[in-house]
Length: 120
Image (tube, rainbow, N blue to C red; front, side):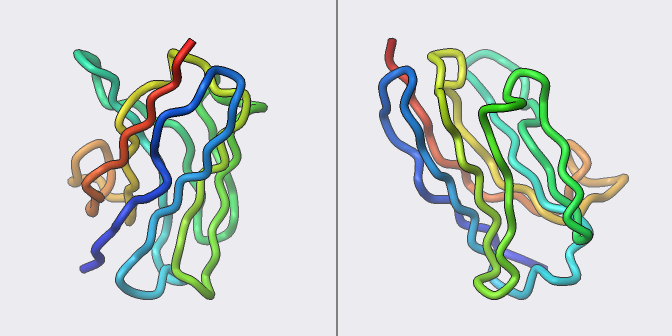
């Protein structure tokens, strides 16, 4: 089991930056993968970025070159640096952990989400 708590969301103008953080309740060293997803109003939950326990990363095409995912095993956190934000990045951002064939959207554990609003 692992509990995830996201932080760092808020209101920002287009072109600005935010840094989201996901704090895990236990060591993330052995967690096979963690990721960030987002869900805009009336839309499906979509992948934003993932990182494996080997450090391999993957990004949605819409955020490549603007967002960067990283993990800090000393602090048991996974972070999402978001630069050059656009109004279409507005969504609730969710942290996920432990890739699984049976978990929702392919992960066993989810945080409660943090809201990001980008104004034009």
